[in-house]
Amino acid sequence: MKTTEILEKLPYSHPFHFVDELLSIDENGVTGTYTFSKDLDFYKGHFKDHPVTPGVILTETMAQIGMVCLGIYLLGELDANTSGHVMLTSTAIDFTKPVFPGEKVTVISEKVYFRFKKLHCKVEMQNQAGEIVCKGTLSGMVTTRLHG
Figure 1: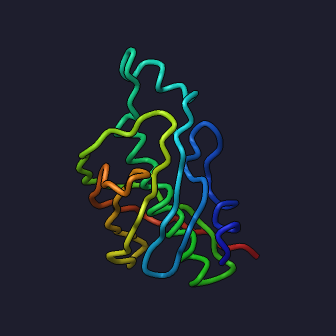
Figure 2 (figure 1 turned 90 degrees about the vertical axis):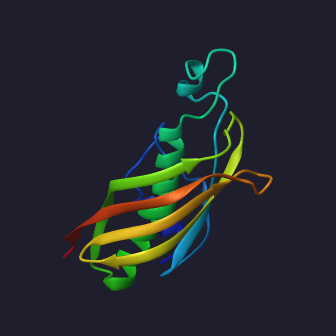
Figure 3 (figure 1 turned 135 degrees about the horizontal axis):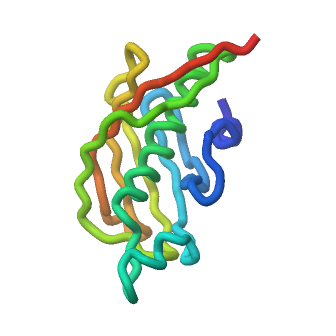
């Protein structure tokens, strides 16, 4: 499955779409990027006069790139007649550096396992300097439907 096909299947739209491009993807993991535009609404109130990307948005970005894109890829590899979504079920993320408006981040995800419709991944997010801004684990359940 091509990266453009995966991006087209994402169930998100602006302003809640946090994937710009997929740099690589295979059955073991995915790497992708997103740039946080300075005009995103949540920056207006998170923190006054010194905006920082909320941790929940960083987690969502890691989930969209590191788990949902990978889940779509894995489903496509299993059966071209099957599609679905990955619903986030658990997170354990440690935050080490802030992400500011205008910053581009890279998410690197490694599949730990995919069985019984559950996808579990180790993920990390790096800033443009290659520094880890957050890392941890994400799990999600895959919902599928057949086309025919």
